[in-house]
Amino acid sequence: KPAPRTQPSAPAAPAFFTSPLSLDEMRGKQAVVETSEGTLVMDLLPDAAPVHVAHFMVRAREGAYNGTVFHRVIPMGIIQGGDPLSKDPAQKARYGTGGLNVLRFEPNTEKHTTGAVSAVLVPGKRDSAGSQFFICVSDQVALDGQYTVFARVVEGIVAAQKISRSPVDAAGVVADRVEILTVTIRDKPAPVPDPFSTETDAQLSG
Image (tube, rainbow, N blue to C red; front, side, top):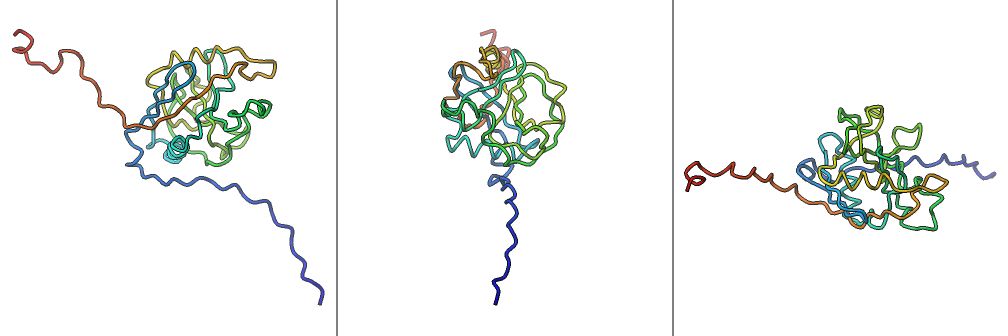
């Protein structure tokens, strides 16, 4: 008997990340991003982008961002980081290509205003986000609706703006390593009351 012919197998479709976290597990969380240029604190937005937030939290807890760099900047525009390849200086020519194609696009109404944290995409591919993200250090209204905003910087935007002014090399990659040292997920602290707002008149006059 002749052997049956086998059809050439089609290339495997990308395996998209599925969230192991519930909305309740993600609400009220912040990411504290310690960088070599200062600390950024981001409010995560699970109601706007639950799968993106879950992916970021899972990767952060694995230590996936530790030692990566902000490899691309637009002065006073955006800073881009989170590529796992950027842990290795020898991979510099490939910075910007790693850690993608694992998240489907999550449309939402969040705007790319100053402090918005949004997912990097492969050009022309909507369902291509992953570990890489960019931070708007000024309003970028032209990006609204095109990328998934999943967090907002609430402290440290000045440090992000400083990073955005980093010198770049001929290939447009940040020349000196601006590292993400650690990313820690924490509960959002309770708001601090304004001074003297909680005391009674009697206490204030005593």
